[in-house]
Image (cartoon, rainbow, N blue to C red):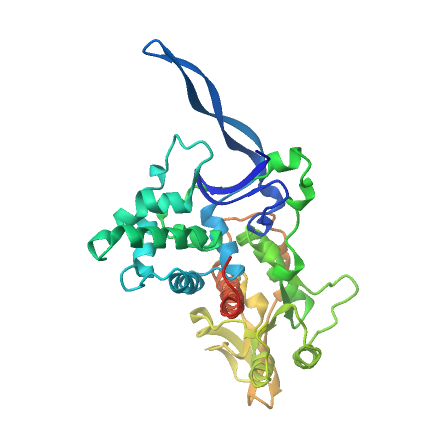
Length: 419
């Protein structure tokens, strides 16, 4: 029979392979996700029924090494790989045309609604190797969404649609299931132990760091920005922190200042860099000016230029300058990365240089080094620390990365089949 490998949500198999023929799903997991997970096997033995000896099949479970992460966390990694709801819809439309079934009779919304509400615990408990999505569709989804009532030949449509669903990519299935509150609690398990034990692959092919091609290079104005962001991802979003790579600061940060960062952006465009890159400016006068200039560049599909987000908290911020102490809007004028930390009850910004491009003064947070030190002292998430502003920054970055990766995935889907 050979050695089998499965990717499953609970007992629902979304992908499988045999011996050396399998898909690399390591990008869904991190090395810390290596745990003991259940493997299901069929046992066979004699059973006497009505004085006749018959073969009886039973399921037994063994626990072995595998990779496991809750679907609620896997979905964030899926999105950063480009598998969004929009991408799932495009894949569905491609398969409907390829398998000749009508999206009017079987719309994507019906499938999405069914998967978001289906009882995930309906999956057969006596199916020895689990249940693949094609079987699950025939057994549970087709009748649940009532397709038989809307088509002339239910059996024909059922067969055509089920064949299409067998070819729906495992990541599209996972993304749709993630809209189901019950399914989000289930583990996504990659059961690779049998393939490894049989010698078809080595452990390092499964338990490894995220490939460079799936990472995003974040380039900021200075080392303090990069350091704070890296620490923030580790504290607030550890399940996706490995997707973000920062410029190596061991030998000194090479892109300090907005002017250098702008020129660096021009250089990346000119050499046609293949990495996925996020250029991030501060939300101050100099950063805003360079951000506006950078938006006018002919940016490739694998690059995005961002500025730290405007926040309501910054619209009435205590400042000090030539005209004394007053409340002012520091969005686009003085909101460097340190302003997004927990600043306590009485932070203040001091106005200094005048920026000719924005016709406004540049400001700087007083005591920013001390605020940064207190942040770096955190070794884990603390409810006593105010992470609200930092969370907005991370969400801003993640959203842009997902948008970029989704566009690249849709572009590829237009030229290649989804399997």
